[in-house]
Image (cartoon, rainbow, N blue to C red; front, side):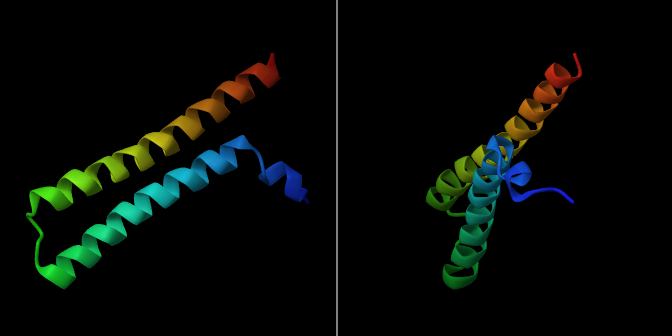
Length: 75
């Protein structure tokens, strides 16, 4: 059984930040679209797209950094 300290590493926090950014962008877009019927609002899209992209890039960064760390451990 793994200890809690094995889960709480830098990759966990990268993933947590990425998920928060991604979900906040998606939830905000859905809320705004349902509440104000502004699905094509350029201001909304210019706010939400960077949140979603930063979330996806942060998740990608966590995966790449973890792969790199595993390669260093194997050597």
